[in-house]
Amino acid sequence: MMKQGGGHAIFTAECSHSFHFHCIASNVKHGNQICPVCRAKWKEIPLQAPSLDPLPARGSINALGWPQNDALMTVVRRLPPRRDLNRRHIVPLLQAPEPSVFDDDESLDLQPVFADRSSGNNKNAADHNSARTIEIKKYPEVSAASRSKSYDNFTVLVNLKAAATIIRQDPRRNQASLPQISQAPRAPVDLVTVLDISGSMAGTKLALLKRAMGFVIQNLGSNDRLSVIAFSSTARRLFPLRRMSDTGRQHALQAVNSLVANGGTNIAEGLRKGAKVMEDRREKNPVASIILLSDGQDTYTVSGSGGNQPQPNYSLLLPLSIHGSETAGNFRRHLFFIETEAVIQDAFAQCIGGLLSVVVQELQVAVECVHPSIHLVSLKAGSYPSRVMADARTGFIDVGDLYADEERDFLVSVNVPAVSSGNQTPLIKVRCVYKDPLTKEIKTLETEELRLERPETSEEGALSIEVDRQRNRLQAAEAMSQAKTAAEQGDLAGAVSILEKFRRVLSETISAKSHDRLCIALDAELKEMQERMASRHVYEASGRAYILSGLSSHSWQRATARGDSTDGSSLVQAYQTPSMTEMLTRSQAMLLGSPSAQRLVQPYWSFGSQPNPR
Image (tube, rainbow, N blue to C red):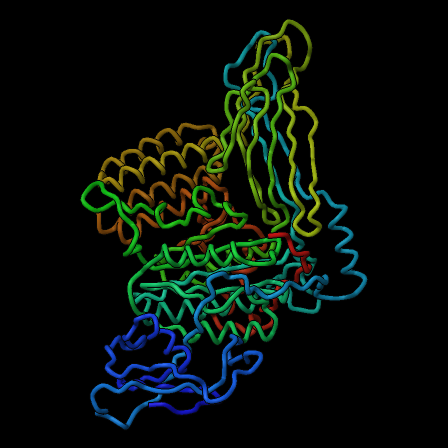
Protein backbone atom coordinates (compact mmCIF):
# COMPACT_ATOMS: atom_id res chain seq x y z
CA MET A 1 0.00 0.00 0.00
CA MET A 2 1.30 3.47 -0.87
CA LYS A 3 0.65 6.69 1.05
CA GLN A 4 2.29 10.05 1.58
CA GLY A 5 4.12 10.72 4.84
CA GLY A 6 5.69 14.04 5.66
CA GLY A 7 6.53 14.74 2.03
CA HIS A 8 7.86 11.21 1.42
CA ALA A 9 6.28 8.20 -0.24
CA ILE A 10 5.58 5.49 2.36
CA PHE A 11 5.28 1.79 1.45
CA THR A 12 3.41 -0.46 3.92
CA ALA A 13 4.27 -4.13 3.44
CA GLU A 14 1.92 -7.07 3.94
CA CYS A 15 3.65 -7.81 7.27
CA SER A 16 2.38 -4.39 8.54
CA HIS A 17 5.79 -2.68 8.61
CA SER A 18 6.17 0.62 6.76
CA PHE A 19 9.20 2.15 5.05
CA HIS A 20 10.28 5.15 3.01
CA PHE A 21 9.53 4.00 -0.52
CA HIS A 22 12.81 5.16 -2.09
CA CYS A 23 14.75 3.19 0.49
CA ILE A 24 12.87 -0.09 0.27
CA ALA A 25 12.60 0.06 -3.53
CA SER A 26 16.40 0.20 -3.75
CA ASN A 27 16.56 -2.77 -1.37
CA VAL A 28 14.21 -4.83 -3.55
CA LYS A 29 16.01 -3.74 -6.72
CA HIS A 30 19.08 -5.61 -5.45
CA GLY A 31 17.08 -8.82 -4.96
CA ASN A 32 16.13 -8.52 -1.29
CA GLN A 33 12.47 -9.50 -0.73
CA ILE A 34 12.77 -9.98 3.04
CA CYS A 35 11.33 -7.49 5.56
CA PRO A 36 14.29 -5.80 7.34
CA VAL A 37 12.30 -5.72 10.61
CA CYS A 38 10.55 -9.08 11.01
CA ARG A 39 12.40 -11.07 8.27
CA ALA A 40 9.09 -12.14 6.66
CA LYS A 41 9.26 -12.99 2.94
CA TRP A 42 7.18 -10.54 0.89
CA LYS A 43 4.80 -11.55 -1.86
CA GLU A 44 3.95 -7.94 -2.73
CA ILE A 45 7.05 -6.21 -4.04
CA PRO A 46 7.55 -2.42 -4.34
CA LEU A 47 8.68 -1.29 -7.77
CA GLN A 48 9.89 2.16 -8.80
CA ALA A 49 8.07 3.74 -11.71
CA PRO A 50 8.85 7.02 -13.45
CA SER A 51 8.23 10.00 -11.21
CA LEU A 52 5.03 11.98 -11.59
CA ASP A 53 6.86 15.30 -11.53
CA PRO A 54 10.22 16.46 -12.87
CA LEU A 55 13.09 15.77 -10.49
CA PRO A 56 14.16 18.83 -8.55
CA ALA A 57 17.56 20.18 -9.45
CA ARG A 58 18.84 19.43 -5.97
CA GLY A 59 17.88 16.69 -3.52
CA SER A 60 16.35 17.82 -0.26
CA ILE A 61 17.51 16.76 3.19
CA ASN A 62 15.37 14.45 5.30
CA ALA A 63 15.13 14.36 9.09
CA LEU A 64 18.55 12.72 9.40
CA GLY A 65 20.20 14.98 6.90
CA TRP A 66 20.72 12.51 4.04
CA PRO A 67 20.11 13.67 0.44
CA GLN A 68 16.98 12.21 -1.09
CA ASN A 69 14.41 12.90 -3.78
CA ASP A 70 10.90 13.91 -2.75
CA ALA A 71 9.13 12.96 -5.98
CA LEU A 72 6.37 10.40 -5.47
CA MET A 73 7.25 6.90 -6.63
CA THR A 74 4.80 4.15 -7.56
CA VAL A 75 3.62 1.34 -7.63
CA VAL A 76 3.36 -2.09 -5.96
CA ARG A 77 3.37 -5.25 -8.07
CA ARG A 78 0.61 -7.29 -6.49
CA LEU A 79 0.79 -11.05 -6.59
CA PRO A 80 -1.94 -12.63 -4.39
CA PRO A 81 -4.73 -10.41 -3.05
CA ARG A 82 -4.26 -8.50 0.18
CA ARG A 83 -5.43 -10.28 3.29
CA ASP A 84 -5.24 -7.52 5.91
CA LEU A 85 -6.08 -3.88 5.40
CA ASN A 86 -5.83 -2.89 9.07
CA ARG A 87 -2.12 -2.17 9.34
CA ARG A 88 0.13 -0.68 12.00
CA HIS A 89 2.61 1.84 10.60
CA ILE A 90 6.09 1.29 12.03
CA VAL A 91 8.57 3.33 10.02
CA PRO A 92 12.20 2.28 10.37
CA LEU A 93 14.41 5.02 8.96
CA LEU A 94 16.39 3.04 6.40
CA GLN A 95 19.37 4.80 4.90
CA ALA A 96 19.64 5.83 1.29
CA PRO A 97 21.82 3.60 -0.92
CA GLU A 98 25.48 4.04 -0.01
CA PRO A 99 27.82 5.65 -2.52
CA SER A 100 30.64 3.53 -3.94
CA VAL A 101 33.17 6.04 -2.60
CA PHE A 102 32.78 7.59 0.86
CA ASP A 103 34.09 11.01 -0.11
CA ASP A 104 30.99 12.82 1.16
CA ASP A 105 32.52 13.82 4.50
CA GLU A 106 31.48 17.22 5.83
CA SER A 107 34.04 19.98 5.23
CA LEU A 108 36.31 20.99 8.08
CA ASP A 109 36.05 24.31 9.89
CA LEU A 110 39.34 26.09 9.28
CA GLN A 111 38.91 28.65 12.06
CA PRO A 112 40.39 28.13 15.54
CA VAL A 113 37.81 27.49 18.21
CA PHE A 114 38.22 28.13 21.93
CA ALA A 115 35.97 27.49 24.88
CA ASP A 116 36.44 31.11 25.86
CA ARG A 117 37.41 33.65 23.23
CA SER A 118 39.17 35.91 25.72
CA SER A 119 42.81 36.93 25.41
CA GLY A 120 43.60 34.55 28.23
CA ASN A 121 42.88 31.55 26.02
CA ASN A 122 44.91 33.01 23.18
CA LYS A 123 47.74 33.02 25.67
CA ASN A 124 47.09 29.31 26.16
CA ALA A 125 47.72 28.77 22.46
CA ALA A 126 50.95 30.76 22.65
CA ASP A 127 52.03 28.82 25.71
CA HIS A 128 51.38 25.60 23.80
CA ASN A 129 53.74 26.63 21.02
CA SER A 130 56.54 27.55 23.41
CA ALA A 131 56.18 24.68 25.88
CA ARG A 132 58.23 21.51 25.64
CA THR A 133 55.83 18.77 24.56
CA ILE A 134 57.91 15.75 25.62
CA GLU A 135 60.14 15.21 28.64
CA ILE A 136 62.89 12.59 28.28
CA LYS A 137 64.61 10.82 31.18
CA LYS A 138 67.26 8.09 31.19
CA TYR A 139 68.04 5.61 33.98
CA PRO A 140 71.07 3.26 33.84
CA GLU A 141 70.59 -0.09 35.59
CA VAL A 142 73.41 0.93 37.96
CA SER A 143 74.65 4.47 38.47
CA ALA A 144 78.32 3.46 38.75
CA ALA A 145 80.51 0.57 37.62
CA SER A 146 84.22 0.07 38.32
CA ARG A 147 86.61 0.70 35.46
CA SER A 148 87.69 -2.96 35.40
CA LYS A 149 84.13 -4.27 34.97
CA SER A 150 82.57 -4.90 31.58
CA TYR A 151 78.97 -5.74 30.61
CA ASP A 152 77.68 -7.68 27.63
CA ASN A 153 74.12 -6.55 28.28
CA PHE A 154 73.82 -3.29 30.21
CA THR A 155 70.28 -1.90 30.40
CA VAL A 156 69.23 1.75 30.17
CA LEU A 157 65.62 2.79 30.73
CA VAL A 158 64.40 5.57 28.42
CA ASN A 159 61.30 7.28 29.84
CA LEU A 160 59.17 9.66 27.77
CA LYS A 161 56.35 11.76 29.16
CA ALA A 162 54.00 13.93 27.12
CA ALA A 163 53.06 17.43 28.22
CA ALA A 164 50.50 17.60 30.98
CA THR A 165 46.87 18.56 30.67
CA ILE A 166 45.94 21.23 33.20
CA ILE A 167 43.33 20.06 35.69
CA ARG A 168 41.61 23.05 37.25
CA GLN A 169 39.14 23.42 40.11
CA ASP A 170 36.51 26.12 39.74
CA PRO A 171 36.72 28.22 42.95
CA ARG A 172 33.05 29.10 42.61
CA ARG A 173 32.09 25.46 43.01
CA ASN A 174 32.19 23.23 46.05
CA GLN A 175 35.66 21.78 46.66
CA ALA A 176 34.18 18.28 46.63
CA SER A 177 32.87 18.81 43.11
CA LEU A 178 34.46 17.16 40.12
CA PRO A 179 37.48 18.68 38.34
CA GLN A 180 37.44 19.70 34.71
CA ILE A 181 40.12 19.57 32.07
CA SER A 182 41.53 22.96 31.06
CA GLN A 183 39.85 24.33 27.95
CA ALA A 184 43.12 24.84 26.10
CA PRO A 185 42.97 24.20 22.35
CA ARG A 186 43.43 20.61 21.18
CA ALA A 187 43.58 18.71 17.92
CA PRO A 188 40.16 17.82 16.44
CA VAL A 189 39.24 14.20 15.79
CA ASP A 190 37.76 12.12 12.97
CA LEU A 191 36.02 9.21 14.72
CA VAL A 192 34.30 6.18 13.19
CA THR A 193 32.41 3.92 15.59
CA VAL A 194 31.66 0.40 14.35
CA LEU A 195 28.76 -0.99 16.38
CA ASP A 196 27.52 -4.57 16.71
CA ILE A 197 23.70 -4.72 16.34
CA SER A 198 23.46 -8.50 15.90
CA GLY A 199 20.63 -10.43 17.53
CA SER A 200 22.66 -11.12 20.67
CA MET A 201 22.81 -7.35 21.34
CA ALA A 202 19.02 -7.10 21.73
CA GLY A 203 17.64 -5.71 24.96
CA THR A 204 19.88 -4.31 27.68
CA LYS A 205 23.10 -4.43 25.65
CA LEU A 206 21.68 -2.36 22.81
CA ALA A 207 20.13 0.11 25.25
CA LEU A 208 23.49 0.55 27.01
CA LEU A 209 25.25 0.85 23.66
CA LYS A 210 22.90 3.66 22.61
CA ARG A 211 23.44 5.45 25.92
CA ALA A 212 27.22 5.09 25.58
CA MET A 213 27.09 6.49 22.05
CA GLY A 214 25.00 9.37 23.35
CA PHE A 215 27.77 10.11 25.84
CA VAL A 216 30.38 10.07 23.05
CA ILE A 217 28.28 12.34 20.82
CA GLN A 218 27.69 14.86 23.60
CA ASN A 219 31.39 15.05 24.44
CA LEU A 220 32.68 15.65 20.92
CA GLY A 221 33.34 19.24 19.90
CA SER A 222 32.04 21.14 16.90
CA ASN A 223 35.27 20.54 14.95
CA ASP A 224 35.26 16.81 15.64
CA ARG A 225 33.61 14.62 13.02
CA LEU A 226 31.77 11.34 13.59
CA SER A 227 30.54 8.54 11.34
CA VAL A 228 28.72 5.45 12.60
CA ILE A 229 28.82 1.98 11.05
CA ALA A 230 26.26 -0.59 12.25
CA PHE A 231 26.80 -4.26 11.49
CA SER A 232 25.06 -7.57 11.99
CA SER A 233 25.03 -10.05 9.09
CA THR A 234 26.07 -7.13 6.88
CA ALA A 235 27.31 -3.61 7.60
CA ARG A 236 25.89 -0.22 6.72
CA ARG A 237 26.99 3.35 7.23
CA LEU A 238 24.38 5.33 9.16
CA PHE A 239 25.82 8.67 8.10
CA PRO A 240 29.08 10.07 6.66
CA LEU A 241 31.74 11.87 8.69
CA ARG A 242 29.78 14.78 10.06
CA ARG A 243 30.86 17.64 12.33
CA MET A 244 29.38 17.42 15.81
CA SER A 245 27.74 20.82 15.79
CA ASP A 246 24.38 21.12 17.52
CA THR A 247 22.66 19.95 14.35
CA GLY A 248 25.20 17.20 13.77
CA ARG A 249 24.72 15.89 17.30
CA GLN A 250 20.95 15.85 16.91
CA HIS A 251 21.19 13.90 13.65
CA ALA A 252 23.72 11.47 15.12
CA LEU A 253 21.58 10.81 18.18
CA GLN A 254 18.52 10.18 16.00
CA ALA A 255 20.42 7.72 13.84
CA VAL A 256 21.86 5.79 16.79
CA ASN A 257 18.52 5.65 18.58
CA SER A 258 16.88 4.13 15.49
CA LEU A 259 19.09 1.00 15.65
CA VAL A 260 17.42 -2.39 16.02
CA ALA A 261 19.27 -5.63 16.85
CA ASN A 262 18.99 -8.71 14.63
CA GLY A 263 21.09 -11.04 12.48
CA GLY A 264 24.57 -12.54 12.77
CA THR A 265 27.94 -11.01 13.68
CA ASN A 266 30.04 -9.96 10.69
CA ILE A 267 32.82 -8.01 12.42
CA ALA A 268 35.05 -8.13 9.36
CA GLU A 269 32.49 -6.34 7.19
CA GLY A 270 31.99 -3.69 9.86
CA LEU A 271 35.73 -3.05 10.10
CA ARG A 272 36.12 -2.95 6.33
CA LYS A 273 33.40 -0.35 6.01
CA GLY A 274 34.87 1.70 8.87
CA ALA A 275 38.31 1.63 7.24
CA LYS A 276 36.74 2.70 3.94
CA VAL A 277 35.21 5.78 5.57
CA MET A 278 38.70 6.78 6.75
CA GLU A 279 40.42 5.98 3.47
CA ASP A 280 37.92 7.74 1.19
CA ARG A 281 37.45 11.00 3.14
CA ARG A 282 38.27 14.16 1.20
CA GLU A 283 39.61 16.09 4.18
CA LYS A 284 41.34 14.87 7.32
CA ASN A 285 41.33 16.03 10.92
CA PRO A 286 44.71 15.67 12.65
CA VAL A 287 43.58 12.79 14.89
CA ALA A 288 41.67 9.82 13.51
CA SER A 289 40.41 6.62 15.10
CA ILE A 290 38.11 3.66 14.58
CA ILE A 291 36.34 2.24 17.65
CA LEU A 292 34.68 -1.16 17.31
CA LEU A 293 32.36 -2.63 19.94
CA SER A 294 31.00 -6.19 19.79
CA ASP A 295 29.72 -8.76 22.25
CA GLY A 296 30.89 -11.90 20.49
CA GLN A 297 32.98 -13.73 17.95
CA ASP A 298 32.70 -13.08 14.25
CA THR A 299 30.37 -15.73 12.81
CA TYR A 300 31.43 -15.13 9.21
CA THR A 301 35.22 -14.76 9.02
CA VAL A 302 37.04 -16.15 12.09
CA SER A 303 38.65 -19.54 11.57
CA GLY A 304 41.52 -21.55 12.94
CA SER A 305 42.14 -24.68 14.93
CA GLY A 306 43.67 -25.93 18.10
CA GLY A 307 42.68 -27.62 21.32
CA ASN A 308 39.10 -28.59 22.02
CA GLN A 309 37.66 -25.56 20.25
CA PRO A 310 38.53 -23.63 17.12
CA GLN A 311 41.17 -21.01 17.82
CA PRO A 312 39.85 -17.59 16.78
CA ASN A 313 42.08 -15.99 14.18
CA TYR A 314 41.21 -12.37 14.92
CA SER A 315 43.83 -11.03 12.52
CA LEU A 316 41.62 -12.21 9.64
CA LEU A 317 39.02 -9.64 10.67
CA LEU A 318 41.23 -6.67 9.91
CA PRO A 319 41.18 -5.15 6.42
CA LEU A 320 44.56 -4.98 4.72
CA SER A 321 44.48 -1.21 5.14
CA ILE A 322 44.66 -1.53 8.94
CA HIS A 323 46.41 -4.87 9.24
CA GLY A 324 49.62 -5.32 11.20
CA SER A 325 49.82 -2.10 13.22
CA GLU A 326 47.72 -0.37 15.85
CA THR A 327 48.17 2.87 13.94
CA ALA A 328 48.29 1.59 10.34
CA GLY A 329 46.60 3.76 7.74
CA ASN A 330 47.29 6.92 9.80
CA PHE A 331 44.42 6.16 12.13
CA ARG A 332 44.32 4.30 15.41
CA ARG A 333 41.97 1.41 16.02
CA HIS A 334 40.35 0.43 19.33
CA LEU A 335 38.48 -2.88 19.60
CA PHE A 336 36.20 -3.56 22.59
CA PHE A 337 34.63 -6.95 23.21
CA ILE A 338 31.93 -6.82 25.86
CA GLU A 339 32.63 -8.92 28.94
CA THR A 340 30.52 -6.90 31.37
CA GLU A 341 27.63 -4.82 30.04
CA ALA A 342 28.09 -2.23 32.77
CA VAL A 343 31.48 -1.10 31.43
CA ILE A 344 30.36 -0.28 27.87
CA GLN A 345 30.06 3.46 28.53
CA ASP A 346 33.20 3.53 30.69
CA ALA A 347 35.15 1.86 27.88
CA PHE A 348 34.02 4.51 25.41
CA ALA A 349 34.58 7.31 27.93
CA GLN A 350 38.16 6.28 28.68
CA CYS A 351 38.97 5.91 24.99
CA ILE A 352 37.44 9.29 24.11
CA GLY A 353 39.31 10.92 27.00
CA GLY A 354 42.54 9.85 25.35
CA LEU A 355 41.61 10.72 21.76
CA LEU A 356 40.54 14.21 22.79
CA SER A 357 43.95 14.90 24.35
CA VAL A 358 46.47 13.92 21.67
CA VAL A 359 49.52 16.19 21.98
CA VAL A 360 52.12 14.25 19.97
CA GLN A 361 51.85 12.44 16.64
CA GLU A 362 54.16 10.29 14.53
CA LEU A 363 56.69 10.10 17.33
CA GLN A 364 59.91 8.30 16.48
CA VAL A 365 62.61 7.70 19.10
CA ALA A 366 66.22 7.40 17.95
CA VAL A 367 68.90 5.93 20.24
CA GLU A 368 72.53 6.58 19.31
CA CYS A 369 75.65 5.11 20.92
CA VAL A 370 78.28 7.68 21.93
CA HIS A 371 81.43 5.84 23.04
CA PRO A 372 83.16 4.28 20.00
CA SER A 373 83.36 0.84 21.65
CA ILE A 374 79.69 0.69 22.62
CA HIS A 375 77.06 -1.05 20.46
CA LEU A 376 73.34 -1.66 20.77
CA VAL A 377 72.42 -5.18 21.83
CA SER A 378 68.61 -4.82 21.76
CA LEU A 379 65.65 -2.47 22.00
CA LYS A 380 62.75 -3.76 24.09
CA ALA A 381 59.67 -1.77 23.15
CA GLY A 382 56.74 -4.16 23.68
CA SER A 383 54.35 -3.98 20.71
CA TYR A 384 55.96 -0.86 19.23
CA PRO A 385 57.98 -1.52 16.06
CA SER A 386 61.72 -1.17 16.66
CA ARG A 387 64.88 -1.84 14.71
CA VAL A 388 68.65 -1.74 15.25
CA MET A 389 70.75 -0.59 12.29
CA ALA A 390 73.34 -2.89 10.73
CA ASP A 391 76.25 -1.09 12.41
CA ALA A 392 74.54 -1.59 15.81
CA ARG A 393 75.27 2.03 16.66
CA THR A 394 71.78 3.43 16.12
CA GLY A 395 68.26 2.13 16.74
CA PHE A 396 64.73 3.43 16.22
CA ILE A 397 61.35 2.94 17.91
CA ASP A 398 58.13 4.00 16.16
CA VAL A 399 55.76 5.20 18.90
CA GLY A 400 53.04 7.14 17.04
CA ASP A 401 50.61 9.20 19.12
CA LEU A 402 50.86 10.25 22.75
CA TYR A 403 47.98 11.52 24.84
CA ALA A 404 48.56 14.35 27.29
CA ASP A 405 50.39 13.09 30.42
CA GLU A 406 51.07 9.69 28.85
CA GLU A 407 54.37 7.96 29.51
CA ARG A 408 56.34 5.39 27.53
CA ASP A 409 59.19 3.28 28.88
CA PHE A 410 61.67 1.44 26.67
CA LEU A 411 64.66 -0.69 27.65
CA VAL A 412 67.86 -0.17 25.67
CA SER A 413 70.61 -2.77 26.06
CA VAL A 414 74.25 -1.98 25.19
CA ASN A 415 77.65 -3.49 25.86
CA VAL A 416 79.90 -1.57 28.25
CA PRO A 417 83.66 -2.18 27.94
CA ALA A 418 86.20 -2.06 30.75
CA VAL A 419 88.30 1.11 30.68
CA SER A 420 91.77 1.87 31.93
CA SER A 421 91.20 5.50 32.75
CA GLY A 422 88.56 8.19 32.97
CA ASN A 423 85.84 8.84 35.53
CA GLN A 424 82.91 8.46 33.10
CA THR A 425 81.91 6.45 30.05
CA PRO A 426 79.44 8.12 27.65
CA LEU A 427 76.77 5.58 26.73
CA ILE A 428 73.87 6.85 24.62
CA LYS A 429 71.90 9.92 23.62
CA VAL A 430 68.23 9.99 22.69
CA ARG A 431 66.44 12.04 20.03
CA CYS A 432 62.68 12.39 19.55
CA VAL A 433 61.16 13.52 16.25
CA TYR A 434 57.41 14.13 16.19
CA LYS A 435 54.60 16.19 14.69
CA ASP A 436 52.64 18.76 16.67
CA PRO A 437 48.98 17.95 15.86
CA LEU A 438 47.90 21.59 16.23
CA THR A 439 50.57 23.39 14.22
CA LYS A 440 51.54 20.42 11.96
CA GLU A 441 55.18 21.34 12.65
CA ILE A 442 57.83 18.61 12.78
CA LYS A 443 59.81 19.04 15.99
CA THR A 444 63.06 17.51 17.22
CA LEU A 445 64.14 17.11 20.82
CA GLU A 446 67.57 15.72 21.72
CA THR A 447 68.96 14.86 25.13
CA GLU A 448 72.43 15.17 26.54
CA GLU A 449 74.64 12.11 26.68
CA LEU A 450 74.00 9.58 29.41
CA ARG A 451 77.29 8.96 31.23
CA LEU A 452 78.14 6.04 33.50
CA GLU A 453 80.33 6.81 36.48
CA ARG A 454 83.54 4.70 36.47
CA PRO A 455 85.26 4.76 39.88
CA GLU A 456 88.49 2.85 40.48
CA THR A 457 86.90 0.81 43.29
CA SER A 458 85.18 -2.48 42.55
CA GLU A 459 82.01 -1.43 44.36
CA GLU A 460 78.96 -1.43 42.06
CA GLY A 461 76.05 0.97 42.42
CA ALA A 462 72.62 -0.26 43.51
CA LEU A 463 70.35 -1.73 40.83
CA SER A 464 67.81 0.84 39.63
CA ILE A 465 64.28 -0.01 40.74
CA GLU A 466 62.95 1.95 37.74
CA VAL A 467 64.80 -0.38 35.36
CA ASP A 468 63.73 -3.47 37.32
CA ARG A 469 60.09 -2.35 37.31
CA GLN A 470 59.95 -2.03 33.53
CA ARG A 471 61.84 -5.27 33.02
CA ASN A 472 59.16 -6.99 35.11
CA ARG A 473 56.40 -5.39 33.03
CA LEU A 474 57.87 -6.62 29.74
CA GLN A 475 58.52 -10.11 31.09
CA ALA A 476 54.97 -10.26 32.46
CA ALA A 477 53.60 -9.35 29.03
CA GLU A 478 55.68 -12.13 27.48
CA ALA A 479 54.35 -14.63 30.06
CA MET A 480 50.78 -13.50 29.30
CA SER A 481 51.37 -13.98 25.58
CA GLN A 482 52.73 -17.50 26.09
CA ALA A 483 49.87 -18.38 28.44
CA LYS A 484 47.28 -17.08 25.95
CA THR A 485 48.81 -19.22 23.19
CA ALA A 486 48.65 -22.31 25.40
CA ALA A 487 45.07 -21.55 26.44
CA GLU A 488 43.92 -21.08 22.85
CA GLN A 489 45.44 -24.47 22.02
CA GLY A 490 43.34 -26.01 24.77
CA ASP A 491 46.14 -26.43 27.33
CA LEU A 492 44.72 -24.48 30.25
CA ALA A 493 46.88 -26.33 32.78
CA GLY A 494 49.97 -25.37 30.80
CA ALA A 495 48.80 -21.75 30.64
CA VAL A 496 48.32 -21.63 34.41
CA SER A 497 51.77 -23.18 34.88
CA ILE A 498 53.42 -20.52 32.70
CA LEU A 499 51.89 -17.75 34.78
CA GLU A 500 52.76 -19.46 38.07
CA LYS A 501 56.39 -19.85 37.02
CA PHE A 502 56.69 -16.16 36.23
CA ARG A 503 55.01 -15.21 39.50
CA ARG A 504 57.77 -17.06 41.33
CA VAL A 505 60.43 -15.21 39.31
CA LEU A 506 58.66 -11.91 39.99
CA SER A 507 58.64 -12.51 43.74
CA GLU A 508 62.45 -12.62 43.79
CA THR A 509 63.02 -9.26 42.09
CA ILE A 510 64.18 -6.17 43.96
CA SER A 511 60.88 -4.52 43.04
CA ALA A 512 58.93 -7.22 44.85
CA LYS A 513 61.20 -7.09 47.85
CA SER A 514 60.79 -3.30 47.93
CA HIS A 515 56.97 -3.72 47.83
CA ASP A 516 56.79 -1.79 44.58
CA ARG A 517 53.17 -0.95 43.67
CA LEU A 518 53.51 -2.04 40.03
CA CYS A 519 55.04 -5.35 41.08
CA ILE A 520 52.28 -6.06 43.60
CA ALA A 521 49.59 -5.19 41.05
CA LEU A 522 51.26 -7.34 38.38
CA ASP A 523 51.21 -10.35 40.68
CA ALA A 524 47.54 -9.78 41.53
CA GLU A 525 46.69 -9.50 37.85
CA LEU A 526 48.55 -12.72 36.98
CA LYS A 527 46.74 -14.52 39.80
CA GLU A 528 43.38 -13.29 38.48
CA MET A 529 44.30 -14.61 35.03
CA GLN A 530 45.06 -18.02 36.52
CA GLU A 531 41.66 -18.09 38.22
CA ARG A 532 39.94 -17.23 34.94
CA MET A 533 41.57 -20.30 33.38
CA ALA A 534 39.94 -22.66 35.88
CA SER A 535 37.90 -24.29 33.12
CA ARG A 536 37.22 -23.95 29.42
CA HIS A 537 33.82 -22.41 30.19
CA VAL A 538 35.31 -19.76 32.51
CA TYR A 539 38.09 -18.99 30.03
CA GLU A 540 35.65 -18.58 27.14
CA ALA A 541 33.30 -16.46 29.26
CA SER A 542 35.82 -14.02 30.71
CA GLY A 543 39.39 -15.30 30.75
CA ARG A 544 40.21 -14.63 27.13
CA ALA A 545 38.96 -11.04 27.25
CA TYR A 546 40.77 -10.41 30.55
CA ILE A 547 44.15 -11.71 29.39
CA LEU A 548 43.89 -9.91 26.04
CA SER A 549 43.16 -6.67 27.90
CA GLY A 550 46.16 -7.08 30.19
CA LEU A 551 48.46 -8.08 27.37
CA SER A 552 47.39 -5.08 25.32
CA SER A 553 47.86 -2.67 28.24
CA HIS A 554 51.37 -3.81 29.12
CA SER A 555 52.56 -4.18 25.52
CA TRP A 556 51.30 -0.78 24.38
CA GLN A 557 51.50 0.95 27.80
CA ARG A 558 48.01 2.28 27.34
CA ALA A 559 44.89 1.93 29.46
CA THR A 560 42.28 -0.60 28.37
CA ALA A 561 38.77 -0.99 29.74
CA ARG A 562 37.60 -4.08 31.55
CA GLY A 563 35.47 -5.00 34.57
CA ASP A 564 38.03 -3.77 37.13
CA SER A 565 38.92 -0.54 35.31
CA THR A 566 37.30 1.57 38.01
CA ASP A 567 38.78 -0.41 40.90
CA GLY A 568 41.36 1.74 42.69
CA SER A 569 43.62 -1.29 43.26
CA SER A 570 43.55 -2.33 39.60
CA LEU A 571 46.69 -2.10 37.50
CA VAL A 572 44.50 -0.87 34.63
CA GLN A 573 44.62 2.55 36.30
CA ALA A 574 48.41 2.62 36.03
CA TYR A 575 48.13 3.76 32.41
CA GLN A 576 45.16 6.09 32.78
CA THR A 577 45.86 9.75 32.09
CA PRO A 578 44.08 12.65 33.85
CA SER A 579 42.02 13.20 30.69
CA MET A 580 40.86 9.58 30.73
CA THR A 581 40.11 9.72 34.45
CA GLU A 582 38.16 12.96 34.07
CA MET A 583 36.09 11.51 31.23
CA LEU A 584 35.43 8.37 33.27
CA THR A 585 34.26 10.59 36.12
CA ARG A 586 31.84 12.32 33.76
CA SER A 587 30.57 8.95 32.59
CA GLN A 588 30.03 7.58 36.07
CA ALA A 589 28.39 10.78 37.26
CA MET A 590 25.98 10.56 34.35
CA LEU A 591 25.24 6.90 35.04
CA LEU A 592 24.48 7.73 38.66
CA GLY A 593 22.18 10.54 37.56
CA SER A 594 24.23 13.13 39.40
CA PRO A 595 23.12 16.72 38.72
CA SER A 596 26.81 17.62 38.36
CA ALA A 597 26.95 15.42 35.28
CA GLN A 598 24.81 17.86 33.36
CA ARG A 599 27.33 20.64 34.03
CA LEU A 600 30.21 18.38 33.07
CA VAL A 601 28.90 17.18 29.74
CA GLN A 602 30.32 19.95 27.62
CA PRO A 603 32.36 19.17 24.51
CA TYR A 604 36.13 19.48 24.59
CA TRP A 605 37.03 22.45 22.40
CA SER A 606 39.39 22.03 19.51
CA PHE A 607 41.38 23.95 16.95
CA GLY A 608 40.13 23.82 13.40
CA SER A 609 42.53 22.05 11.06
CA GLN A 610 43.91 22.63 7.62
CA PRO A 611 42.80 19.90 5.22
CA ASN A 612 45.50 17.43 4.25
CA PRO A 613 45.91 16.27 0.65
CA ARG A 614 44.39 12.86 -0.01
